[in-house]
Length: 66
Image 1 (cartoon, rainbow, N blue to C red):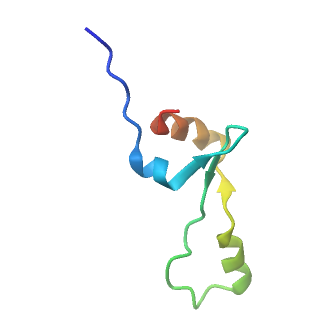
Image 2: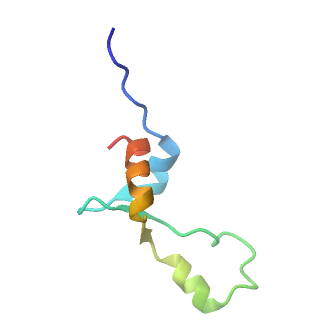
Image 3: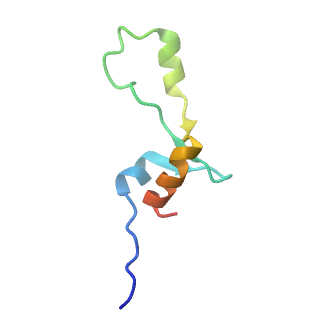
């Protein structure tokens, strides 16, 4: 009996990208609504993308099937 391939998590694939060095790049949360009470400095920081922590990277690469 053939072993089935693992399906990639399409939601994760659409939200994250792999960098050239193999890290996983993601956008930050808390930038969609209720922005009036957040400081401009905080909102500026939320614009920038960041990389996943090493603890999460292994798990995400498995779910992204890459």
